[in-house]
Amino acid sequence: MAFQIPRGTQDILPGEVEKWQYVEKIARDICRRYNYREIRTPIFEHTELFLRGVGDTTDIVQKEMYTFEDKAGRSMTLRPEGTAPVVRSFVENKMYGDPNQPIKLYYIGPMFRYERPQAGRFRQFVQFGVEALGSDDPAIDAEVIAMAMELYQSLGLKKLKLVINSLGDIESRKAHRQALIDHFQNRIHELCEDCQVRLEKNPLRILDCKKDRDHELMATAPSILDYLNEESRHYFEKVKAYLTKLGIPFEVDSRLVRGLDYYNHTTFEIMSDAEGFGAITTLCGGGRYNGLVQEIGGPETPGIGFALSIERLLAALDAEGVALPVSRGIDCYIVAVGEKAKEESVPLVHKLRKAGIVADKDYQDRKIKAQLKAADRLSAKFVAILGDDELAKEVINVKEMSTGEQTEVPLHSIVDYLKERLS
RNA sequence: GCGACUAUGGCGAAGUGGUUAACGCACCAGAUUGUGGCUCUGGCAUGCGUGGGUUCGAUUCCCACUAGUCGCCCCA
Image 1 (cartoon, rainbow, N blue to C red):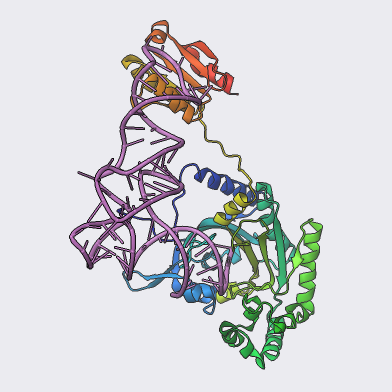
Image 2 (spheres, rainbow, N blue to C red):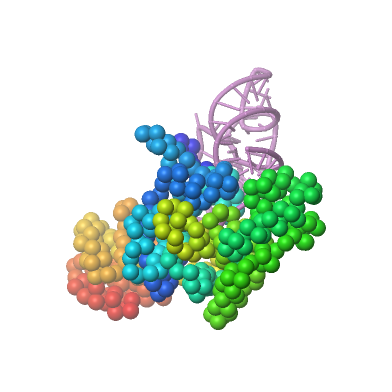
């Protein structure tokens, strides 16, 4: 084979792309109703943005970035996630000065992470995400979570689990961090190598370790929820209360630690329980990032958002056996027999299309039988047959494929006839 | 970054150190002279991921590379 698609990327071909279009449409409809507006930021940014925004101790930055130098020697990175770029744009365009607060934004577009591809994991994948900037009302946390849940549910997914947690504010996190260090320090050598490093860099991440999950130190580790200060605790209670009011079931997992540094207060993940999903369970992840705007150089501004991958959403639909209502058949296929009819079929198919009918014709110089077969393959509802006989009588034979029933229609009224039958 | 498995026509899939590389689906043509879905007949890989090596001879054995799948790490 001469050329191959780059590792971890995929072509989305006709037949599959309709599902994407459908999902994207539903996502946009939801955003419209919740009053979130689309923002489109570049596919690449200055590398520094992600170092600062995502955090330079995170896996994303340490080993997953697609970084390159441009011709002027600047370090650029294909965006690994959407929040940092949106916040950059928020600051750069001074959206904090907009009287319409909070600023509610969404994006749908490709993200890039340099990883070994496997089930549900790609080097280029598409994320749909929303960001609400400028409000620290717990109601907006609930709103954002509700949007993600609505997308999955409206598409027909049932086996969903919403898990939430609170990381608290800076003060709470500090207290918890110290408690973790105290807890693990003496016996840290019993944990895996990664955890030993984590103790120094980010002890919170030890709780998320898959290897040491069953170690007794894990079960007895101090829970962040016990270290939330009054304000943080109250905030978390409000978020949970709102979720309950919205009828959204959730479970609290104090070990839910997200992979990005910018989170505080509310964090959440939506997972799939569906069988046959491989090692992938997380469909959507998100949380609050009150310090991020400042980190990127803007005024102190609270923010919250989520991101989800369309690939995984589609995989979840597959796993649950949900079929999306995508159609691809055509309304009418013109079958032309003979030179004269073939010529006449060109303006005819054009006329149908202009009238809003999904129409096609043969371009392979096939015989009538093969043309009918082609029409069948295209799931044409009707076939309009034009030959010398019809031309002489100025009619056309319209055949309904599902019944085989055939009607002779005056050529000049073909559009009206089809529109009538198609409605 | 690490590990396991895999790589044969458009798709699925058998197979062998040596002579024409099964079969199924799809596709094309014909039986059916102007009518699809069923049936029958015929056609359809000088080629077995790429590059080396072993051998008289390799698609078959060995090595490397590339890619895929799954898993680890981590995540969307």
